[in-house]
Image 1 (spheres, helix red, strand yellow):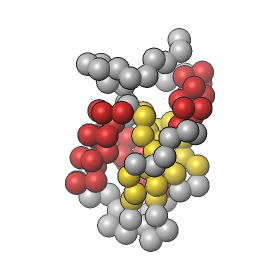
Image 2 (cartoon, rainbow, N blue to C red):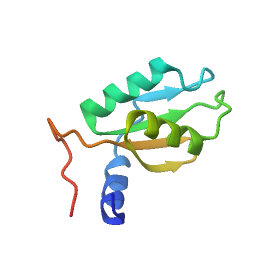
Image 3 (cartoon, helix red, strand yellow):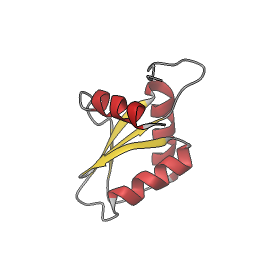
Image 4 (tube, one colour):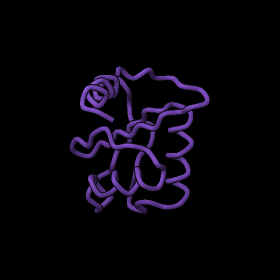
Amino acid sequence: MNTKQRAYLKGLAQTIDPILSLGKSSLTPEFTDAVAEALKARELIKINVLKNCYDVPQTLAATLAERTRSEVVQVIGRKIVLYKHNHENPKIELPK
């Protein structure tokens, strides 16, 4: 993903609400599966890291991206934005 595409996705992410919240149980296999399903359905998702989760959001984002084969768009504070292109049913058209 190049910087122009990342900037475009950041702009789209500003208007969406977090659909998942990561709490004190941190990264469980069930949470990772939920993230993978959400990425397949929406392509671009925002995750809220609650205050009772003691892991660093940047580390969580990198681990989630690796496990779901997605890309980290940005991590701002306790919010993580992930993107994964759906080849079968694309919802977002990225600029070249």
